[in-house]
Amino acid sequence: MPAHLKPSDFALAARLTSHKLYEWQNKCMDAVAAGYQTALCAPNGSGKSSTVVTFLILWFLHEYPRGRVIVTSGSWSQLENQVFTSLKNFATHEFFKDWEFLDTSIKTPAGGSCEGISVNDSKKAVGYHKDENSPVLLIIDEASAVFDPVFESFGKCSPTFQLITGTAGAASGRFYRLFTSEAKFWFTTKIDFRDCPHLSDTKRMIDLEIYGSDSIFYKNRWLSAFASDAGESVISLDAIRECVAYPPAWEQPGFVTCGCDFAAGGGNLCVLCLARGNKIELDEANWCWSHANTNHSAGKFVTLFRELKLQSHQIFADGDGLGRGFVDNLEECDFYVREMHNGAAAKDSDRYASIVAEQWDQLNTLIVKRRIILPACEELFAQLSNRRREYSIKDGLLKIKLESKADMRARNVSSPDLADAAVLALMNGWGSLPGNLNPAGDKRMRKELERVNRTVEHYRSPFATRFIDFSRGW
Image (cartoon, one colour):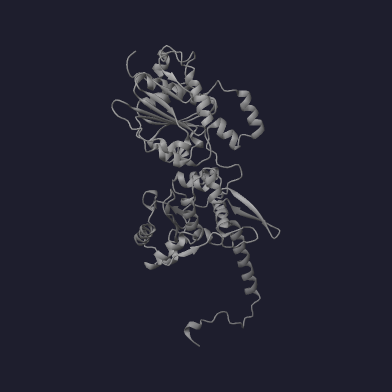
């Protein structure tokens, strides 16, 4: 056979399947072979692992006999029982009969190999660098269940070809970002049940009847939709999309406040966010960074404050934990920022467990009512919509509280650095003004005050002194 066939042509020529492949399967495999970083999001049972991943590995080792494949999955049992089981079905195929098929590896006579690696062993993924004689194919399957640090470990490889595939999950994590904020760097394919006629429509209709079309389960499984909440999130992703699609007029642009979220390496970010009236501004390239040295980051905050001509009273920052040291450093440069403490009591302490829960919930109200202008930042949208609303009971009162960051990490949701900075900026500025949360109610209140004032004027004695300007003296 001619060298370096496209995977779609190879599958046909080698008779890897008796049925015709779907167009999306051919297109995805051929994109990988063309050297594009490729991401595929598809329903369970669509043929991601058993067809696309399996055929790609067979094509690669056949066309590049000395090549190396490294494949991992968010589920080790899925990798072992689906991917490598599918591969072993071809152990007697005439094209591959000289290959050695083991439980989680393949070896070719020319020295090529395919190795399955657990995500727990991702740090062992070293030395997989492409060279002229031995190219590398990197595959990450079931990527929704793969934590960001694992992506970072595999990111140290330099593959010739790359495929990341999985079923839609939460609107967070690296796999989600491949289809949103990082999509311009990837060849992306997202398909749903309508692109897979072989899937059981009976099973889909049962899921639809049991869970409903708006449920996370149905959206993830059948529609390949990254759904973040089912009434559990403080802020709905759908509400965010609506607010972005139909933004309000820009109000009070001269009312400027700044929010700062502090961090010191470890994957978390230092973030500066501005609110100019009801408009949130976030420059990801220049206002978000990670650095282990807190003095360096404090210096960068000072530089940004000066560039943006901010005064101390306009700056709000997290003063808890690590933030205490940042605040001290900023004060040395004459920026006496206004400290916020997440555990502080809410203004409406009968309803909220803390000030931060109150501010997040009130931001949700502003988003639902489409009162604010949000920046085009998918990571911010994900962070805003991924934090869950929880409840506590204290002194007989049911109070709203926020999911802890530790609990967010436990379910593979990144720290809400950008979201916290945005909340600090807006909800201590324009968002805190009376009437913004309920403009109709505020309007009614003002009309009532005007009516009362007219009534008082009507009954005022003609001999009463209406106004004395004491600034002019007696």
